[in-house]
Amino acid sequence: MDGLTPVEVRAPGRWQIATVASVKRETPTVKSFRLDLPMWMPHLPGQHYDVRLTAPDGYQAQRSYSIASSPLDEGGIELTVDRLADGEVSPYLHDVLEEGDQVEVRGPFASYFVWRGESPVLLVGGGSGVVPLMAILRHRRRTMPELPMRLVYSVRTAEDVIYADELGADAELTFTREPPGDWAGHTGRIDAQLISAAGLAGGIAFVCGSNGFVEAASSLLLENGFAPESVRTERFGPTG
Amino acid sequence: MSNFISRGFTRRREVPEELADRLPPGQYIESGFPVLTAGPTPRVDTGEWALKIDGMVGRPREWNWTQFHQLQQETIPCDIHCVTKWSKLGTSFEGVSLDTLLEGVDPQGAFTMVYAYGGYTTNVALDDLTGGKAWVVTQHEGQPLPPEHGGPARLLVPHLYFWKSAKWVAGLRVMDHDEPGFWEANGYHNRGDPFKEERYWTD
Image (cartoon, rainbow over all chains, first blue to last red):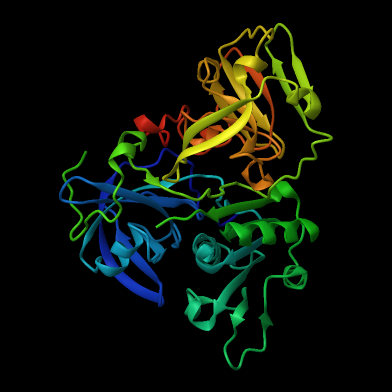
């Protein structure tokens, strides 16, 4: 545990008004928002914030979004948001929110799907399920880069890769629909070979994605040397 | 409530007037049935399934799958509310009332810890389980409850956030004091009344 930033589990913060510091387009449907928080507190990698929107008539809508940034980024958080066409909050964040805007947030929440420095760690993400895993990966790179951790990341096509410019030797991609033309790596759904190639059996695993993805991936982990109590899952419900 | 207005935000989802008072604050209507679980889905064979009531009781009870189905079964029309903001209105389950299960048990404490196959726990006060407010259910809308939704049997406490309705329920331990269960120890509210929006510790 040497080198791990001590981050305590504590009561989450109250609603506060964050300011958008920057917006980055990750894919055609995914954007990352850097928010400055007046009442920032350190989170555990894997935790989420709630975002609340209020209309002039008082109508409110809330959704939860995973934190993508390391708690070493003091004073702010990054939320990466998939735009769901029939959603209520994500289309607003994508289509309206820009640098300098304000948005109401509250967190950080939940302390089960979090990384506290356990080792070794296998991260398994499908689509935008990679977001909380990226917080874990980024935090490990900055605190204990030698700690055994690998990300196995399943996406449909090349243009769906979130954090494309940050995926290094500690990340293994697989394309389920259309790999890039020059792709020599894995294609198709995550399978036993990808899991065993990571060489982290017996460690702890974090699995995040759609329900179908999590069901399939967690079954695969159990068949390949991971204990049920060492597999933490986070599933997207329909959200938006 | 703050006076903050989100620039350029307007309502995108209308709630039908007849449903408005059934939707708790901060929730939206979801027609599907999303799955949320902290770990892999346990597979529980009904041949090995048992439901227990134990702890501080005058008479502990245990039912196997066959015995459980000989108890009075009820159809429970209800609305369910997940702390992740979705609500499913006008759904139904079938199962056995906790009032039926607790007959003759003689609880000696006011608190319970519900425990499940796979290790999940959640604390529910006895008052929230009795008086026609909670069931152990094995069917959803006329079909056997699928494993990912807690099958073969889950607790159903529709007046509290749905994490209290423990999937893969294995039993109920009566206690003379309150203790946080799994999510209650991980930042979520001890009771979880959706109409009071009791989501997290500080609510």
